[in-house]
Image (tube, rainbow, N blue to C red):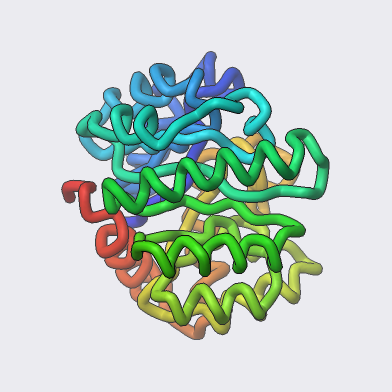
Length: 258
């Protein structure tokens, strides 16, 4: 059994065949999925997908690209929405300065609200970080000095220093189809160094389809290729990789019920 720890099934990319996508995931032994909220305006749609099966969970949050859409978001709002029984994590949230869709100020304000919500609920913080290593580490250090919280750096492709520091904080990591890309040598090196008991699989579908599906719409069934990619990097068998990553998911997302 496999877990896809990061899917985006509520968008238009899956509007026409969502039931088929979920069925294919089951046929591929994808036992559980976490449907990620990237904008709180989409929360109801995220929950609607999660309610299609006992094995589908949800998060609540706003992606850093969309921070400008929720300039006044508060921890209390997130905490209230996180009371839904399907919600097992806070995010996706963090920093992304690659495209500049939202200002740094908006991203910082947004991220700090999510951190407080994670601290208060103790639901894991699902972190997106891109071209922001120094500020990310500084922000997380300040927050941890105030109160501990569990966290995951999803689809991690940032620097080794941030990864090493996050590992020392007992944070978790997830790897995606990027691991299978021909030239992703740095990403494979990062994955090789990640803690064996705190690494999870994800597709981030509909994005980042793994080889041999690259260029197609990604879907949860393809997490099998990510599992094999991680197995190759770590020197594990496929079944061992499936077991380790599934255990990691449930160790982190403790509100999730097997």
